[in-house]
Amino acid sequence: MSTPHQYSITATDPGAHLFSVSVTVAKPDPAGQEFAIPAWIPGSYLIRDLARQVVAISAAAEGREIGLSKTDKSTWQADPCESPLTLTAQIYAYDLSVRGAHVDTTHAFFDGACVFPVVVGQEDQTCQLDILPPQKPVGNDWRVATSMQPLGAKRYEFGTYIAANYAELIDHPVEMGDILIGEFEACNIPHAIAVIGHTHFDMARICHDLKTLCETQLKFLGAPKNLDRYLFLLRVEEDGYGGLEHRWSSSLSCSRKDLPRRGETKVSDDYRKFLGLCSHEYFHLWNVKRIKPERFTPYDLRAETYTGILWVFEGITSYYDDLFLLRSGLISSKSFLELLAKTITRVTRNRGRHLQNIEESSFDAWTRFYKQDANSSNAIVSYYTKGSLIALALDLTIRKDTDGKKSLDDVMRECWSLYGETGEGLPERGLESLARSVSGLELEDFFDRYVRGTADLPLAGLLKAAGINMRMRAANNSKDMGGKPASSSSMPPPWLGATLKVEAGASRFGVVHSGSPAESAGIAPGDEAVALDGLRLRAHNLDDRLRDHHAGDTVTITAFREESLLRHRVKLVAPPEDTCYLEIDSDADGGAEKCRKDWLANISK
Ligand SMILES: [Zn+2]
Image (tube, rainbow, N blue to C red; front, side):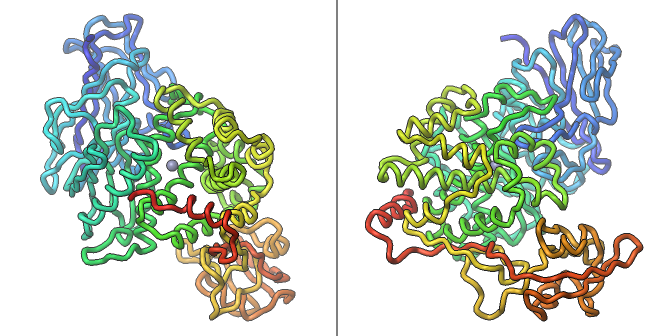
């Protein structure tokens, strides 16, 4: 084996938020070795230009400095040199997200794409990584949590680790600090959860629940051959939520209230959200980390890589994440239907679904989904939420039209065997072909209408055939996200069609829905609300102010835009029925009842 690239990383100066990173290349390109830092991170489709955080960089060989010139925003080229060449960089790291790098005196975290330069042309070379302790004193004894394979390092300690190539090097995020660790086995594979952030919670319960969840998923598609370990890296914040998938781990953030306290036994809505996040990222270890779009094999991390099938990966995963909570017995079918109804509500309120289809949403993720503004819900559709409803509709269509003989599960199993186990990329229309061949159904019209078109999914009929009644109603108030029947205690307010939120101490309009009374009257995002018919208007009292009126009433809303006070005459209308809840159909026939039982079965037993 030729000499691996020798990487090292240390939090040189935690107080200054600096990592020092080096890589030694045994055989540099004699024409002048190039090094580059990725422009984007796999799983997060936004050009981040991570090289902008490099604050100092130099090259040396045999103790003498080698000239280094920058050839574009992310690339450096060393002067020709034939002896082992070492590149050293100081990298500023103060982005506290699951897809960032962050170091301070309490901990250090990095996603490898943020910190490790790639040796251009030698991407396939094995990489050894020395993870070294901070060079300046920090508060506590730090431990190390990563799914990277140790090479001499003891588990959870500083030392040497190894990765098969660059893509793998950056696929193992690393957390260092005062880490709490829980361990469990799922289908005989060692799993762990490493938690950072002061918090008190029931680790034994989390390990128990994650074990059930992981085992149910492992039995569904089968453990990938190289899945010999798995790590959930979790950062607990006061108000956090996010996740990024990797092949042997996921990095997650959640809110303190999401984790169950010792003694609690109920699955709260917050804990359900946390389990859903774990379920989502774990399902990705198959769907997007091993079954990948053909256009991502291999990733080109220097520039946007366009694909129209992100919905297959994020949408189908979003459908299965909650379904696996149900299939694991962690939540009830009532709870699952509540989550589904909330997703239907979100998509129904998203007026951009008629302007952008799901392929376009995937393709334009770089500039639209990842760069949202106040108009996004009027102009674009989410490949997560709409994608998950397409998965639902496809699943129920296949179940109905094959008399329960096939389902989306069969399509996913075939997808795993053809594209996951082989590592061959999924072609742009690969899932469609699979759905047709596995089910034996003519599904071209389905894909034309709902994937390549913007038609609303025929969910009411499909759910009815699965023994579920889909009900739509007006929102009870501006916090109502659906999932439950209407509140009996308060009337829905008439519709203004704009949200109000507190920003820097002021109540400002956020989204102004297209076709709404607010839009017709000229209210704009960012306007600072003052009063409605002379009474002070604030984010917290918008519903009450509106409830003083009825549909058809004209009211005056005053608001500042910059320094000008504007008076808007707004004619309120009846609220749209855009809020969904789902109920078991007690009159369902035998076929529908069987479909529902098959679909909503707990398969963990
Ligand atoms: Zn995802």
